[in-house]
Length: 292
Length: 253
Ligand SMILES: Nc1ncnc2c1ncn2[C@@H]1O[C@H](COP(=O)(O)OP(=O)(O)OP(=O)(O)O)[C@@H](O)[C@H]1O
Ligand SMILES: [Mg+2]
Image (cartoon, rainbow over all chains, first blue to last red; front, side, top):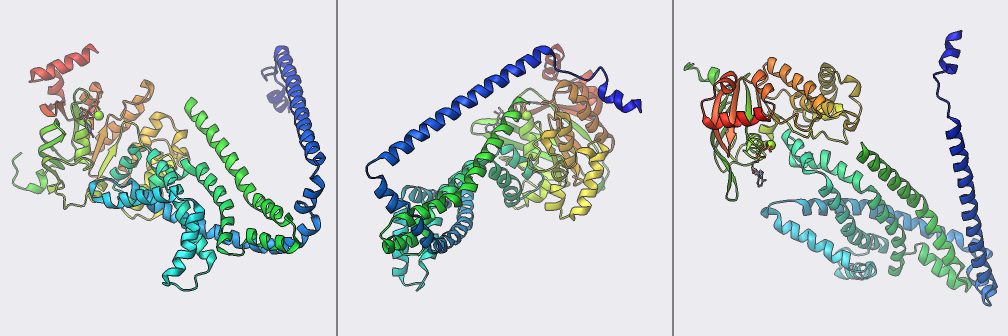
């Protein structure tokens, strides 16, 4: 009966003071004003750009050759079909990259003179493939491997996937290595002291912590690779880019390229947002941690 | 004392002429030490005297340059011995707790049981929860270590070290990183382990605690054992001049 009203409405419950209410009202007015200013300036800028574009002498021509709705619709099924190949290559390459990169990173963090040859090999590999343009790796693998005649008739998409793995595993292994080295040595010490083997320590203690530290960086590399899968078209694989090229030739119109480009953006977009969100969250958490 | 049956008197730990140097810097200079079952030995000495290095050497994290380490009569400093197996028989607690931040408190405690001793998860967790309950941390079993205070973390780390029933427990200044008001709870736990018969070697700066809990106190200076005496005698009637100086400096603050 009176118990509940007492608990809520008792005089001990805090009410903001007049001073605080006044501050809040002021902040609200300030925020409202800032939002208005930034919204207006954005609209003005966008309007100016649109006006310059549409008002340009060649606009009608450009609109027709790059943004033709009928061509877009007609070429969409083929391009989507091609995009499906890109997605398959992307999945295959991602799995391959993680495996090879983990292996390379582990090799590079081995200590002791016994492991020097392995360390040197891994270092040479990462130097080579971080320095070499992806398109050249694609040509070398795409045309070189079939020339070896070892495995006849490997699909070009598979060769493209291998080239992507070679290049991206070099980058990603460096990310992993940085993550592994950022795990404090005392964590290793504690694990070994419990009797865990080197391998168990790596799998259960070091790598999980390293992964957490480098997740945003890894996701950025993933977004970059999402775009670069389009390069397998140079080997003749009929992916979204190649399909767009064929459609472009067919219609004498560049709209299919725009369609393919937008599809790639759509594909990457969720990952880009997720990466941003995750980095912001990790930053916030670290700041909380440093205050405590 | 000189009983003929070796198995009864055989120390848990025996060090014979243990030496360790980093370059020209000799950090352990011929250490001889016996630790009997259920004995609590306190290692004291100035900063840099080699206490931590000695503990790491016993745990085979640090290699000896000479001498031997025997665990229940077995020479474990032999390179042919499986070091992981030896470490699994020795519990270690560090100054900075070193809990695994990505694992729950319970997983920290049960990790070695599950991975090294191959205890089924259910059984390891039952035992882990029991241990956590015994130190009043049952409610934190599923929490991550960063939710715990320093004292709670260190007590969880101690429980992690004893969860597999080690033959020997090594403690390296387990209260040095703690706020003064949290030291008591950790020392109480160590005291109860000592009373329960755990064999302990502990490096410490807590002289009052060493005097109260340790059976023997070993004074280390520049990598040598200067004095090794029963706790009471060590503090009340030290034989060595250097021990007296050390204790005087300590009492002076
Ligand atoms: N890995 C290493 N490389 C080189 N020198 C080392 C190494 N580890 C320890 N030392 C040296 O050995 C000496 C003894 O160190 P140790 O940590 O064992 O001392 P301690 O008695 O534990 O000191 P504290 O009371 O400060 O913990 C120090 O001079 C230290 O610099
Ligand atoms: Mg030390």
